[in-house]
Amino acid sequence: MKYYFLLLLFLSISINAQDDLFSEIDTDSVGDQYATAAFKGLKIVNFESTKLVAKKELVFMVSHRFGSIENGFDTFFGLDDAVTRMSFIYGISDGFNIGVSRSSFQKIYQASAKYRLVRQKDNGFPFTVVAFNSILINTSFEEDNLPKIKFKDRLGYTAQLLISKKLSSKLSLELAPTFFHENLVPFNEQHNSQYAIGFGGRHKLSKRWSVNVDYGWHLNRADNSPFKNPLSIGFDLETGGHVFQMHFSNAQAMNTNGFLGQATGDWSDGDIYFGFNLSRVF
Image 1 (cartoon, one colour):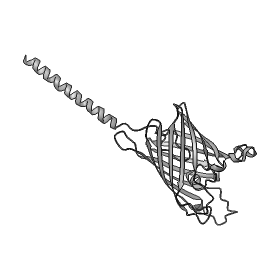
Image 2 (cartoon, helix red, strand yellow):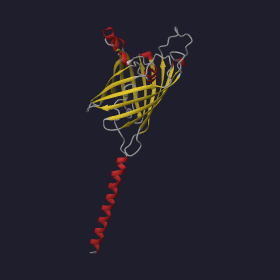
Image 3 (cartoon, one colour):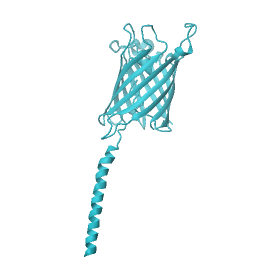
Image 4 (cartoon, one colour):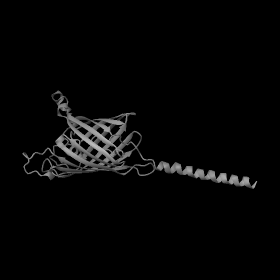
C-alpha cells in the first residue's frame, strides 16, 4: 500500500509539473512571436519599407518610371521618357542589408545600408524599427555648365527611421521621419539640409494582391520651390514568392533625395508617372 501511495504522489507531482510547463509555453512562446510580412516588398511605393532581404540572399531589382501620362500619345503616355534604376541588395544577416544602385534619372549612383533595430512582437514591443542610410553621387552635372563644380558638390545623403506596425493580417502602417542633405541644391533659397516625414500603408485585398500608399511631407521646402510633396499609390502582386509592384506617383525620381526634394508632378492636373518594380532573388 505504501508503494501505491508513493506512486500516486509521484504521478500527481509529475502532472502538476507538466501543467506548469504547459502554462509557461502558453505565455512565453506567444510572447516570442514576431510580427511577419507587414510589407511584402522592400518598398511601399517610393519609401523604403521595414522588410529586409534574408541572410546571404541577393536581390536584383529593376525599377522603371515612365514619363508623365499627361502628354498622352505625344510620348505614348510617358513611354518615350522612361527612367530606369537597377539595384542590388544583399543580406549580410537577416537584420542587416547593403545595397548599390544606378538610376538614369540624373545618372545617380547610390550606396545604402538598411538595418533592423527592433522587431514588433506579440505581448512585447509594439513596433518594428529599421534604419536606412544612403550616400549618392549625381554624375549628371557637367563641367561645361558648372565650371567650378567639385566632387563634393555631387554628393547627397539620407538618414531615415522606418517605424511600422502590423495592425492586423490585412493592414500595416509605417511612419518614416527623414533627414536628407544635398551639397548642391537646385536654387539658393532651398536649404541644403532638408527634413520630411513619410507616411505609408499596405492593405491586403486578397491572397495575392495588396494596395499600397505613401506620402512625403517636406517640412522646410523653400516658399518659391516648384517642387511638390510626393503622393504615390501602388499595387503589389505576389507571384511564386516574388512581388511585382505597379505604381502611380507624382515623382519620377526613385531615390529618397529625388522623390522628396524634386517631385514635379501634380495629381490634380493628371501630371503623374506610371512605373513598376521587378525583382529576382539569388
